[in-house]
Length: 142
Ligand SMILES: [Zn+2]
Picture 1 (cartoon, rainbow, N blue to C red):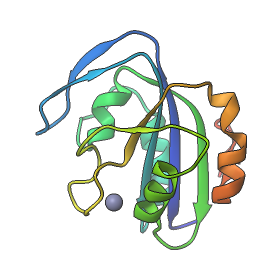
Picture 2: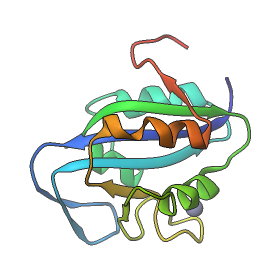
Picture 3: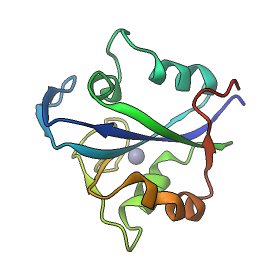
Picture 4: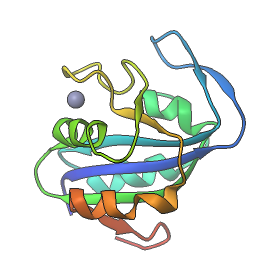
């Protein structure tokens, strides 16, 4: 798999104020977060990088992953659809997602590629099916 779009589902145990790159300090509430990203090449390497600890901080998501834990990864092979996926998630009833303004969207027109989700991750199975993403076993080798 060379290119595709992915969604990281993360949990943050404690409230954290995190300075995210060039963004201001963001006050992260404990709970679950969804981040939408894509890679045009090196898709597997990108996912592996997200899972790796102690790396140089480069993307906005790197700063959050210093504190939050990845619980699930959803993937969709093929073209880059991260912006439309972010848009669909934002508007996906009956769920309520709260965008973290400017996060992960420096290079596009979206308000954000990161959403806070106040509910339980276990409740999001239907969302994954609606979006037609596949759940990646985190220990699975590509
Ligand atoms: Zn976007």
